[in-house]
Image (cartoon, rainbow, N blue to C red):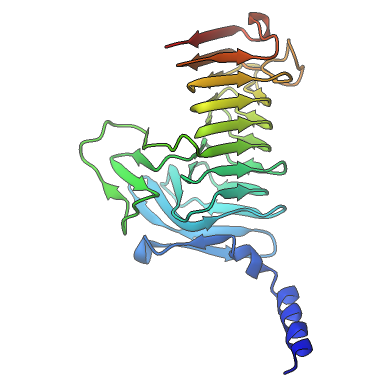
Length: 291
């Protein structure tokens, strides 16, 4: 076969099997053994199944986890599962440029110590809560799920404080949201990283938006208004906060489209506000620096 014929053959293969490039973006690792995640692709979407089920949790583990622009990636939600936890054990940042969703009401956690980028066309289709974090590990229901030191199965810890806990976070790791991230009514939306940049939209109807890390730069929008007019809470809790001009916290102040009930800004060091954010732009505005 000549070089030209080989090239034509490769082009024909690529055109007839476009899912090959899609699957390359979602690469399960082997750390969960027989309980490894699987990716089933169709023309409509990619469905993530498999995983290690522990009580009401299902654990997924990927070497690479990316969603291409225009791609739709969904997690299956088996009966009895309340939390879907996904770690990235490779060395690359996760780029979410399309739609990320859950087939059900389970909460979704995405853990990548290298960082996570949500592009301008990123969109969440999630009824439960969503957490994006660059923590090294996550502790839930006495199970430790580590992205840096993966075991064959989620490791059981018997002396943990009940509830959700996060492991060490690299101060240089980034969570960058440029898209529209929305969760279900009354649910939580959390971005937790070393550095958190928010220039998109965070929507949690009658819920809670939490942005936490070493440093936060905020020039985006937050909407926590519920269907019946209730409004939730925005909590920003890093060491340093920069609120830039154009940030939207309420429907009465800067923007008629967005609202939060309580704005709580907590920082160990400095709070810098480039825009005029006053109490009339939220029902309750709390600034706490130098804690």
